[in-house]
Length: 79
Image 1 (cartoon, helix red, strand yellow):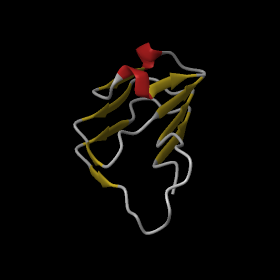
Image 2: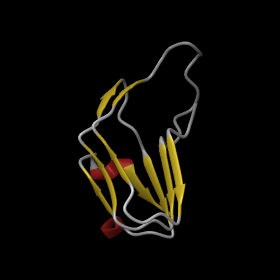
Image 3: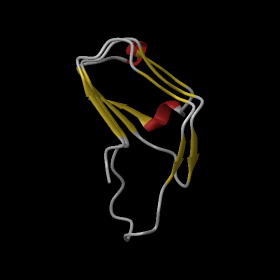
């Protein structure tokens, strides 16, 4: 279930080298962010393999400068 990763006020978070497979165990609902990050700094989300749809990332009280990611920029939402 969503989110895959949620963090608040974390410095130096690394989520890397994972294989994520979305299951069809339950019917797919509306798309929600797989990552919810709030007031974090120096975050890295890189080198992950996502089987299925590409994930969304939601940033709260952060800017795009706070995260390094190889995900498509349009999948990163700043609120």
